[in-house]
Image (tube, rainbow, N blue to C red; front, side, top):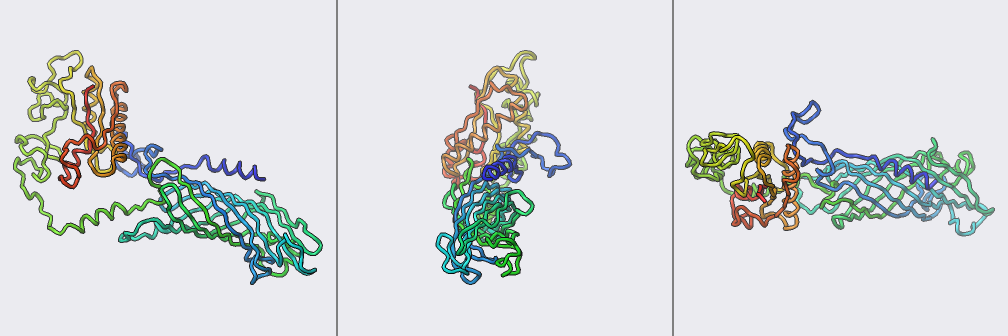
Length: 478
């Protein structure tokens, strides 16, 4: 029986899958289909795009108390206070931040009646019983703390109230003891029609660390069977004492959950409003009126001088959102003066190549790249034209390039190093996907050690456009 339960548990756990977390993968460039959200950055959900851990293993032990039966474990019922034991192990999968599934195996022994079956019967009328059980069930897990959390709740998020409910199969052996001795009264095998049961309850979790949770849990188990308590046949004298047809028990346990995965945070502990908290705090601290274009627009390029990175843009030049004149082919000649806008060429030839055959000869060691949003490695759709031009340039050159990722100074050194590596690898993968040979590219992450604006340390010393310029990926010829 134990082998059968373990086999079924493994078979149910292996094919589990989830589509609940945000993706950071690069868009394929294809138009969204009928079933997509319509986003320009639709991408498949993969293990590489996960932001949170969503698997865990839980173990625990406790005390079961038969409460509704002909023989009970509590003194105010048909018996005295008798304590059994129970244990559980489960494989847990978080589907969203507020809902998950558990595949749980329970084992234990209840004790009920008028005396402990380890002792001799005190008199000829006294009846004692014990029931050994094994159970396998699927439980739904609702995180009420995430469902009910208020926007203005700024308290540390270390406690969480969970609710559980599910069904499964239970196998048991019920023994009865009286003055004549102990005997097996009922045996139920697993996976039979009369072996189904239900359980529901609540648990209070405390986050000890990013890897371990401590949980106290109280479950109510409905066996659906009048013979679970050891009373024997359902028409026996003992089972006629009460009218209920299901022997039920409470199961109070204390356990640990071990969270699995490489990420810093688990999906069930993620507060989806934390970004809102931060933005609300920033707005609350601003006590001055916002004045748009306080410094004007000296070069009349449509970008206010407050965040214009090129204050002397030539008249008539097209600019990007930061006020920098566009250079579509990244050859150092802005489009206004470039006679070959989409083909790179030297400055002395007005941006056109000097030869019509053969590869391009590198004249620069660095190529400008793209910038990223705060705490993100996602390539923005607006940056794909720049990367597509980089594909053409690198393919037409003889050399190879380092794809270098960098961050601003927010966050720890270790976190920024990993973030810069992800940015560099995302850009490298995009270039390879669009035709660049793998051998021509090498992804390198430099974290916050390669600032375009070194004076932005800490980040609060600079305007946001400078911090954004530090969050970049660029190309350097080897």
